[in-house]
Length: 377
Ligand SMILES: Cc1ncc(COP(=O)(O)O)c(C=O)c1O
Image (cartoon, rainbow, N blue to C red; front, side, top):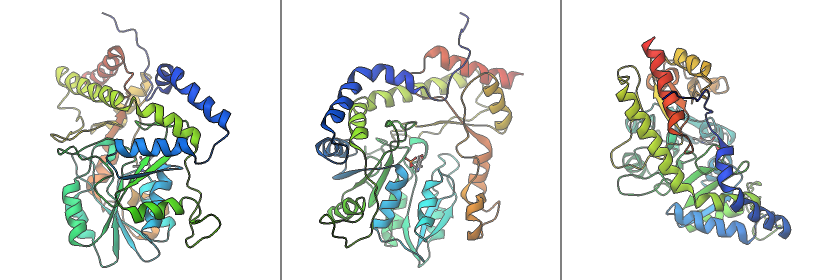
């Protein structure tokens, strides 16, 4: 049968919204009618529900994933002179937040299979100034938290998990992202598996003192109102976002299942078309729950493949083309090109293709056939 598809976007939020309109419009209207936009019962309800989803004792809605990281570092009193170890390959905020507090981001290379922080490299990067480790659960799969937590405990270091891309991802013991370290940080950027109608984020913790401190810090450090022992900021999540996210959370597991099915479809399709020698599909660790915020392909001919897929109107993106050591703003740290060969090669060889749950088989086949067309040419 002829495939009539002629283009596939990287993400189609309109397709998702079409299935949700009837649930979301009334809750937005309710907030508007109440005129209760900041804090209030709707936000608290959402925080309680999502804390449970994340298997976390405490959860606090915040203004973005970036602010979640900043708030977490502030709650741990990170300041000038402190070193914070981050993977060299992630979204900018993972490292940027460290520098914003005048602390020093220390970069480590990644595992070539999962693209997550390499625990051996982490071990080597620890110095007497190290205070925090920030593993990132990149693309929706947990970093090796068993090894990372062991190193953290042995060296008396805090762990902030950057779980921006990994809500609901689990290890083989069904333990969820954000519950291993001292603080978990999540993003509700619209392209995330749980995306709001704008910016938003979340911090999780199992520690009551840290929860209270972050609760004050997200509100300029006020406690009680107008009395400030701490200097914080405005890192609050709007009630409008909370009610939208609360509705979407009810669908999240279904969407994750859809993403996992799409991932399996692609992997099988690539084998069927005998493309395994040309292109590498994501390595999902046995027993882990990978939530596929992104589906990453790898090829030595990445740039040409990307150009070909774009010429077929297929949305593709490179996450991320420049590792932190090669970012101009981090030149002051003194790293050189080539210091992190695994991540730097990944930055040249990887690309993301559409994985959103509403994809049809015709769309996936169009993408698979377009990949085959490139390698068969
Ligand atoms: C790994 C990672 N960390 C942090 C962030 C920052 O989140 P936000 O865009 O909500 O500020 C993102 C999201 O873009 C991310 O992917």
